[in-house]
Image 1 (cartoon, one colour):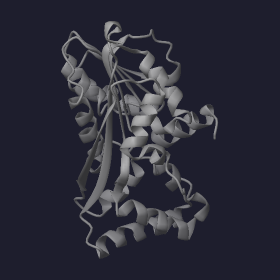
Image 2 (spheres, helix red, strand yellow):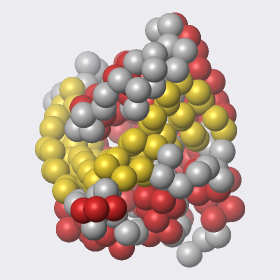
Image 3 (cartoon, one colour):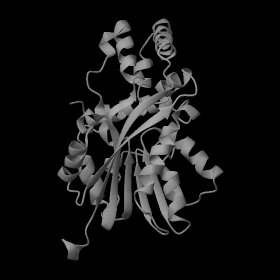
Image 4 (cartoon, one colour):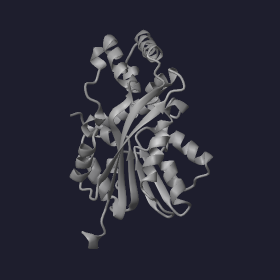
Length: 277
Protein backbone atom coordinates (compact mmCIF):
# COMPACT_ATOMS: atom_id res chain seq x y z
CA UNK A 1 0.00 0.00 0.00
CA UNK A 2 1.32 3.45 -0.91
CA UNK A 3 1.69 6.03 1.83
CA UNK A 4 -1.02 8.56 2.50
CA UNK A 5 1.30 11.41 1.50
CA UNK A 6 2.05 9.76 -1.86
CA UNK A 7 -1.65 9.13 -2.47
CA UNK A 8 -2.53 12.75 -1.68
CA UNK A 9 0.22 14.10 -3.92
CA UNK A 10 -0.81 11.89 -6.83
CA UNK A 11 -4.52 12.70 -6.48
CA UNK A 12 -3.87 16.44 -6.30
CA UNK A 13 -1.59 16.35 -9.34
CA UNK A 14 -4.07 14.38 -11.47
CA UNK A 15 -7.08 16.54 -10.69
CA UNK A 16 -5.25 19.84 -10.88
CA UNK A 17 -4.26 18.78 -14.40
CA UNK A 18 -7.82 17.63 -15.17
CA UNK A 19 -9.30 20.98 -14.12
CA UNK A 20 -9.11 22.33 -17.67
CA UNK A 21 -11.81 19.86 -18.77
CA UNK A 22 -13.44 18.95 -15.43
CA UNK A 23 -16.52 21.14 -15.95
CA UNK A 24 -16.88 20.58 -19.71
CA UNK A 25 -20.43 19.68 -20.87
CA UNK A 26 -19.27 16.13 -21.65
CA UNK A 27 -18.64 15.65 -17.91
CA UNK A 28 -22.14 16.67 -16.83
CA UNK A 29 -22.31 13.44 -14.81
CA UNK A 30 -20.38 15.13 -11.97
CA UNK A 31 -23.29 17.51 -11.38
CA UNK A 32 -25.89 14.84 -12.05
CA UNK A 33 -24.61 12.37 -9.47
CA UNK A 34 -23.67 15.13 -7.04
CA UNK A 35 -27.21 16.48 -7.13
CA UNK A 36 -28.66 13.00 -6.70
CA UNK A 37 -26.48 12.46 -3.65
CA UNK A 38 -27.78 15.65 -2.05
CA UNK A 39 -31.37 14.76 -2.95
CA UNK A 40 -31.06 11.64 -0.78
CA UNK A 41 -30.11 13.61 2.33
CA UNK A 42 -33.30 15.66 2.90
CA UNK A 43 -31.34 18.74 3.93
CA UNK A 44 -33.13 21.63 5.61
CA UNK A 45 -32.56 25.34 6.07
CA UNK A 46 -29.91 26.02 8.66
CA UNK A 47 -28.08 22.72 8.28
CA UNK A 48 -24.28 22.60 8.37
CA UNK A 49 -22.74 20.41 5.65
CA UNK A 50 -19.19 19.20 5.04
CA UNK A 51 -18.37 18.02 1.51
CA UNK A 52 -14.99 16.29 1.22
CA UNK A 53 -13.33 15.58 -2.14
CA UNK A 54 -15.72 18.29 -3.30
CA UNK A 55 -14.12 19.06 -6.66
CA UNK A 56 -15.75 22.10 -8.26
CA UNK A 57 -18.87 21.84 -6.13
CA UNK A 58 -21.05 19.27 -7.88
CA UNK A 59 -22.60 18.32 -4.54
CA UNK A 60 -21.47 21.24 -2.36
CA UNK A 61 -23.29 23.87 -4.41
CA UNK A 62 -26.65 22.01 -4.45
CA UNK A 63 -26.20 21.51 -0.70
CA UNK A 64 -25.68 25.26 -0.24
CA UNK A 65 -28.89 25.94 -2.13
CA UNK A 66 -30.77 23.48 0.10
CA UNK A 67 -29.56 24.81 3.46
CA UNK A 68 -30.25 28.42 2.58
CA UNK A 69 -28.77 31.61 3.97
CA UNK A 70 -28.94 30.34 7.56
CA UNK A 71 -27.00 27.19 6.71
CA UNK A 72 -23.35 26.66 5.90
CA UNK A 73 -21.41 24.38 3.55
CA UNK A 74 -17.69 23.68 3.74
CA UNK A 75 -16.13 22.04 0.67
CA UNK A 76 -12.67 20.49 1.03
CA UNK A 77 -10.39 19.13 -1.68
CA UNK A 78 -6.70 18.52 -2.39
CA UNK A 79 -6.85 20.08 -5.88
CA UNK A 80 -6.64 23.86 -5.60
CA UNK A 81 -7.48 24.31 -9.30
CA UNK A 82 -10.83 22.56 -8.80
CA UNK A 83 -11.55 24.59 -5.68
CA UNK A 84 -11.02 27.84 -7.54
CA UNK A 85 -13.54 26.75 -10.18
CA UNK A 86 -15.97 25.96 -7.37
CA UNK A 87 -15.49 29.42 -5.87
CA UNK A 88 -16.17 31.01 -9.24
CA UNK A 89 -19.36 29.00 -9.75
CA UNK A 90 -20.68 29.74 -6.27
CA UNK A 91 -20.05 33.47 -6.76
CA UNK A 92 -21.86 33.37 -10.08
CA UNK A 93 -24.87 31.86 -8.31
CA UNK A 94 -24.72 34.47 -5.56
CA UNK A 95 -24.09 31.91 -2.81
CA UNK A 96 -22.57 33.40 0.34
CA UNK A 97 -23.02 30.36 2.59
CA UNK A 98 -20.31 28.16 1.07
CA UNK A 99 -16.56 28.00 1.56
CA UNK A 100 -14.08 26.04 -0.54
CA UNK A 101 -10.97 25.09 1.46
CA UNK A 102 -7.78 23.35 0.40
CA UNK A 103 -6.93 20.49 2.71
CA UNK A 104 -6.81 16.84 3.66
CA UNK A 105 -10.17 15.91 5.09
CA UNK A 106 -8.65 13.33 7.41
CA UNK A 107 -6.77 16.06 9.26
CA UNK A 108 -9.10 19.04 9.34
CA UNK A 109 -9.10 19.19 13.13
CA UNK A 110 -12.79 20.10 13.21
CA UNK A 111 -14.90 19.43 16.31
CA UNK A 112 -16.71 16.13 16.72
CA UNK A 113 -20.42 15.97 15.96
CA UNK A 114 -20.38 19.38 14.25
CA UNK A 115 -22.17 18.70 10.94
CA UNK A 116 -25.73 17.77 10.09
CA UNK A 117 -24.52 16.02 6.94
CA UNK A 118 -21.17 14.96 5.53
CA UNK A 119 -20.78 14.08 1.86
CA UNK A 120 -18.04 12.35 -0.12
CA UNK A 121 -18.84 11.80 -3.80
CA UNK A 122 -16.39 9.71 -5.86
CA UNK A 123 -13.52 10.36 -3.50
CA UNK A 124 -13.32 7.90 -0.61
CA UNK A 125 -11.53 5.28 -2.73
CA UNK A 126 -8.51 7.54 -3.25
CA UNK A 127 -7.65 7.16 0.43
CA UNK A 128 -5.38 4.16 1.20
CA UNK A 129 -7.10 3.45 4.53
CA UNK A 130 -10.78 3.90 3.73
CA UNK A 131 -11.97 2.56 7.09
CA UNK A 132 -9.95 5.19 8.96
CA UNK A 133 -11.31 7.85 6.59
CA UNK A 134 -14.91 6.81 7.23
CA UNK A 135 -14.26 6.75 10.97
CA UNK A 136 -12.99 10.34 10.85
CA UNK A 137 -15.98 11.50 8.83
CA UNK A 138 -18.40 9.71 11.14
CA UNK A 139 -16.77 11.40 14.14
CA UNK A 140 -17.88 14.77 12.78
CA UNK A 141 -21.53 13.80 12.15
CA UNK A 142 -23.87 15.09 14.84
CA UNK A 143 -26.51 12.80 16.43
CA UNK A 144 -29.39 12.54 13.99
CA UNK A 145 -27.12 13.59 11.15
CA UNK A 146 -26.17 11.67 8.02
CA UNK A 147 -23.06 10.54 6.14
CA UNK A 148 -23.31 10.04 2.37
CA UNK A 149 -20.66 8.13 0.41
CA UNK A 150 -21.14 7.85 -3.35
CA UNK A 151 -18.96 5.53 -5.44
CA UNK A 152 -18.77 3.82 -8.81
CA UNK A 153 -20.31 0.39 -9.33
CA UNK A 154 -19.38 -2.49 -11.62
CA UNK A 155 -19.79 -0.63 -14.94
CA UNK A 156 -18.06 2.71 -15.31
CA UNK A 157 -18.65 4.29 -18.74
CA UNK A 158 -18.73 1.04 -20.66
CA UNK A 159 -17.83 -0.10 -23.23
CA UNK A 160 -15.45 2.85 -23.69
CA UNK A 161 -13.57 2.40 -20.41
CA UNK A 162 -12.59 -1.22 -21.02
CA UNK A 163 -11.55 -0.44 -24.57
CA UNK A 164 -9.43 2.47 -23.31
CA UNK A 165 -7.30 0.11 -21.22
CA UNK A 166 -7.02 -2.43 -24.03
CA UNK A 167 -5.75 0.26 -26.39
CA UNK A 168 -3.39 1.64 -23.77
CA UNK A 169 -1.86 -1.80 -23.28
CA UNK A 170 -0.65 -1.81 -26.90
CA UNK A 171 1.28 1.40 -26.21
CA UNK A 172 2.30 1.29 -22.55
CA UNK A 173 1.46 -1.97 -20.79
CA UNK A 174 3.28 -0.67 -17.73
CA UNK A 175 0.54 1.94 -17.25
CA UNK A 176 -2.35 -0.51 -17.34
CA UNK A 177 -4.06 -0.88 -13.99
CA UNK A 178 -5.44 -4.31 -13.26
CA UNK A 179 -7.48 -2.87 -10.42
CA UNK A 180 -9.03 0.58 -10.11
CA UNK A 181 -9.32 2.30 -6.72
CA UNK A 182 -13.08 1.77 -6.46
CA UNK A 183 -12.86 -1.98 -7.12
CA UNK A 184 -12.62 -2.37 -3.34
CA UNK A 185 -16.20 -1.06 -2.95
CA UNK A 186 -17.82 -1.67 -6.32
CA UNK A 187 -20.89 -3.57 -4.99
CA UNK A 188 -23.52 -2.84 -2.37
CA UNK A 189 -22.22 -5.35 0.19
CA UNK A 190 -18.61 -4.10 0.18
CA UNK A 191 -19.65 -0.45 0.38
CA UNK A 192 -21.99 -1.17 3.28
CA UNK A 193 -19.26 -3.17 5.01
CA UNK A 194 -16.87 -0.23 4.63
CA UNK A 195 -19.20 2.21 6.35
CA UNK A 196 -20.05 -0.22 9.12
CA UNK A 197 -16.35 -0.98 9.68
CA UNK A 198 -15.83 2.76 10.13
CA UNK A 199 -18.48 2.84 12.83
CA UNK A 200 -21.40 4.12 10.77
CA UNK A 201 -24.89 2.99 11.72
CA UNK A 202 -28.25 2.60 9.99
CA UNK A 203 -26.45 2.16 6.67
CA UNK A 204 -28.47 1.82 3.49
CA UNK A 205 -26.91 1.40 0.05
CA UNK A 206 -28.77 2.17 -3.17
CA UNK A 207 -27.59 0.97 -6.59
CA UNK A 208 -28.35 2.89 -9.77
CA UNK A 209 -27.67 1.81 -13.35
CA UNK A 210 -27.86 4.64 -15.83
CA UNK A 211 -26.76 5.89 -19.22
CA UNK A 212 -24.44 8.77 -20.04
CA UNK A 213 -25.14 10.15 -23.50
CA UNK A 214 -22.36 11.16 -25.88
CA UNK A 215 -23.09 14.05 -28.22
CA UNK A 216 -20.09 12.96 -30.30
CA UNK A 217 -17.22 10.44 -29.98
CA UNK A 218 -14.93 13.30 -28.93
CA UNK A 219 -16.96 13.59 -25.73
CA UNK A 220 -15.34 10.41 -24.48
CA UNK A 221 -11.84 11.82 -24.90
CA UNK A 222 -12.92 14.98 -23.10
CA UNK A 223 -14.09 12.74 -20.24
CA UNK A 224 -10.71 11.02 -20.22
CA UNK A 225 -8.92 14.36 -19.92
CA UNK A 226 -11.31 15.71 -17.30
CA UNK A 227 -11.19 12.83 -14.83
CA UNK A 228 -8.97 10.32 -13.11
CA UNK A 229 -7.62 8.89 -16.38
CA UNK A 230 -5.80 12.19 -16.98
CA UNK A 231 -2.92 11.01 -14.82
CA UNK A 232 -2.38 8.04 -17.13
CA UNK A 233 -2.67 10.04 -20.33
CA UNK A 234 -0.17 12.63 -19.15
CA UNK A 235 2.49 9.90 -18.89
CA UNK A 236 2.34 9.22 -22.64
CA UNK A 237 4.58 10.96 -25.14
CA UNK A 238 2.67 13.13 -27.65
CA UNK A 239 2.75 10.57 -30.48
CA UNK A 240 1.52 7.72 -28.29
CA UNK A 241 -1.13 9.94 -26.78
CA UNK A 242 -2.47 10.80 -30.23
CA UNK A 243 -2.52 7.15 -31.29
CA UNK A 244 -4.47 6.23 -28.18
CA UNK A 245 -6.91 9.08 -28.79
CA UNK A 246 -7.49 8.13 -32.41
CA UNK A 247 -7.98 4.45 -31.55
CA UNK A 248 -10.53 5.36 -28.88
CA UNK A 249 -12.49 7.57 -31.24
CA UNK A 250 -12.35 4.98 -34.02
CA UNK A 251 -13.75 2.32 -31.69
CA UNK A 252 -16.73 4.52 -30.82
CA UNK A 253 -17.34 5.43 -34.47
CA UNK A 254 -17.04 1.88 -35.79
CA UNK A 255 -19.36 0.48 -33.13
CA UNK A 256 -21.72 3.46 -33.26
CA UNK A 257 -21.45 3.95 -29.51
CA UNK A 258 -23.61 6.93 -28.58
CA UNK A 259 -24.08 6.28 -24.88
CA UNK A 260 -22.15 4.69 -22.03
CA UNK A 261 -23.34 2.47 -19.20
CA UNK A 262 -22.49 3.63 -15.69
CA UNK A 263 -23.35 2.13 -12.31
CA UNK A 264 -23.38 4.29 -9.20
CA UNK A 265 -23.72 3.32 -5.53
CA UNK A 266 -25.15 5.69 -2.92
CA UNK A 267 -24.55 4.82 0.74
CA UNK A 268 -26.41 6.78 3.41
CA UNK A 269 -25.77 6.29 7.14
CA UNK A 270 -27.58 8.03 10.00
CA UNK A 271 -26.24 8.57 13.51
CA UNK A 272 -28.65 7.80 16.32
CA UNK A 273 -29.39 10.19 19.14
CA UNK A 274 -27.88 9.06 22.45
CA UNK A 275 -31.25 7.96 23.81
CA UNK A 276 -31.72 5.72 20.77
CA UNK A 277 -28.42 3.88 21.17
